[in-house]
Length: 638
Ligand code: COA
Ligand code: AMP
Image 1 (tube, helix red, strand yellow):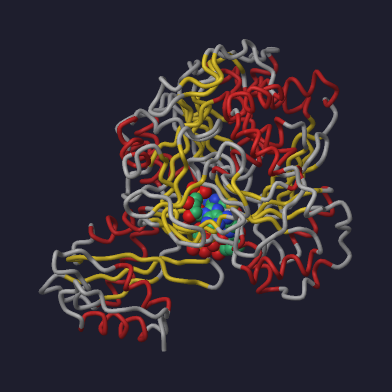
Image 2 (cartoon, rainbow, N blue to C red; image 1 turned 120 degrees about the vertical axis):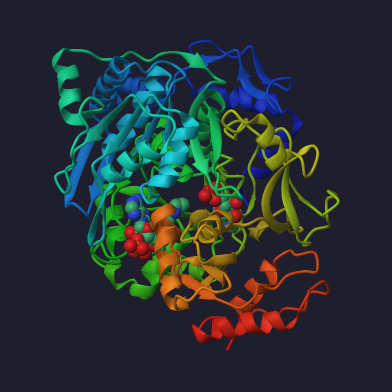
């Protein structure tokens, strides 16, 4: 109940003695060897957590629950409206599946520290694969299925996996996405070649296997089981990487966010009861995808560490088959909490504004809706509160941070909700808003949001084999701080508001994308002289990319033909997830006298916001042309 939250006391306790706070939180984890030092400031770019400790993530997420009496409890409830399938997997079954797959990985030469890339849809085998890696100390790197071959290739090349685990296909509404040809193309493009690929053949779209390299998943695992083999959990250093997750940077080259093992387990285990307010044995549903950080933390590791039942949903909020899907799954699984992106709710609201499809579903066990991935607009939050009648909690985090920076910790007692704010910093996060000179600004003043170092357990210690890029990307701008590259403000009560990015990253339907990466693709087209991609406001997806291109002199193909080429090219190079559908040919791009493209002003024009003429602009009339090009497509202000 608002007013009785323990939050302020807990946050103050962390501020008084961070190491004591995390040492106590570490009590929720089974350690093989406890940490010699809770925090070691000398190690890594800014320090490392739980140095000297040995631990195994799979033991904590699976085996210990089997031993403690949860063997017959459902670990995973797989709900797949796109295949019309449902599966209940107990903790005991999960342990058997994971131990067998882990033994198969060992047979394929995978050992502690080796990387394994996963390119999988939302099927239980994706979780088996992640946990099997964790079991033997291998480092998984999951690639979202909506990325194309080139993106997959970039990740294979950087992570240099010994083995790839993949499914033959994914299923999107109305189409089967054949993953295997994309994997084959990625292996062809990548300089690093995995030694083996284990392919889960799905009946909806089986794949042809490559002689010598590919194994049939089901057959290979069955053979291991028949031989009675099961891999035990291998202790790893708490500071060993559990996974690498690639995320968009400002260029087309993704950043390999490293997640260490011990700190992550501690942070997630703290968050489940205190932030999400769920108890072991309860059902928790995160409707994201295992390809994103939200999926890693709250489909897989968080709920399983805490002995919850996790829901694995292979479907969409709408269209599989309708906008009542969320309510049906909550009722049928008995989920006490749902975690999704605001865009998913906007999709439901658009199709079923009065939530008629909620009728007949028993939501009596459902307590809280959590939102993250993009700014939660107050209208959507208010709508969700009205139709659900439960607290709707916005919380803010990033791939880099691994768990929420700011939230309303319902487990500690909810604080009053302020629409538009993801509430307050969680313990571990010293959130500051800085001006351009790196000085904290007064309350209610916009600035760059930065975190005073060190980052807490669970946050990235570095980028994969790129300490220097880590320092440059996150630590260099404001010495002593981690730069979130999000802009926002703190109010007089310490509530955070996150308004948008300060870099070239855009957020499309809760998916993080690099406009710089899209520009690289457009610029590679032989007819394009120069280009600029911006994110423009969209009522469903929050933002969508919009590309402006200037064609080379003498190009005689019709602009609309080239624009269609460009849309297809981004889809082919980056993938359908980029949702790149708008390419506009213009005569010139607006620039400053020093040649910098005025993307910010272009965005304001496209979003119909008031804008002022930048004093440094080279030729003010170009902005008129940009407005005109947008109006021709029915975009921007009338
Ligand atoms: N594999 C292959 N293709 C995929 C994919 C996957 N795993 N996920 C998405 N795509 C494709 C979609 O089919 C779509 O293709 P299309 O251009 O042929 O239609 C394209 O990528 C864009 O997808 P998306 O932006 O997700 O739009 P959508 O129209 O499919 O669905 C929403 C719209 C709002 C329902 C959907 O975006 C959604 O549920 N978003 C939630 C996001 C989320 O959970 N984010 C995680 C952070 S918490
Ligand atoms: P990702 O790394 O894909 O999780 O995306 C992280 C980015 O999404 C953040 O840097 C923010 O820009 C945005 N984001 C995530 N959650 C929120 C939120 N609750 N409010 C505002 N922006 C958010």
